[in-house]
Length: 223
Image (cartoon, rainbow, N blue to C red; front, side, top):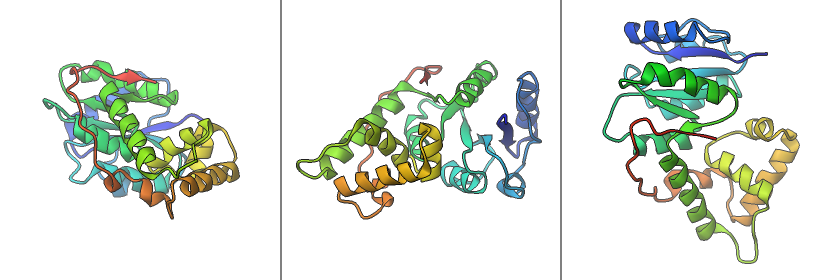
């Protein structure tokens, strides 16, 4: 089943512009929702949510978490206001599991379908500086917490990356094409090796956020 796309925005002009862009894409499009309640009142299959940071008066990170709880397996693309640097905010939202960012600048209408296509293919649409800072954060965590004589396997390293971005065992299993039971086994091993009681010890607020270098206005990395 194809993943449907739904915009959450209270700005009618932006909503109309986005819907016009989506109309040219060969994917199911759901009616735009003006708020979280309208988007989540009918929980269902996974969606790609387009979150308008300019009109939604709420933190997009927890919003994505609540939407994911109602529609497990959903993906998220944040529409951000033009700024000199959105990188600190993008890194914070990336840790909340948001897969991509498009700044609503001069080229956003060209970039948006590219970002959507990338995310629907299971890739990311984020600045390389965010991924670099994320890798530094993961290394910092391992250096601080990994018990002497222990190391993570390659698979555990993959699982750790998803854990740090607040994904559930089921979402990890789907992303890595493994059973939920196997994902749970890897999570348990990781927490044991890091001497942590639960996955909440992996959240970024438990550690200092790394500094970010400025990025070009249209520089995005597709992985």
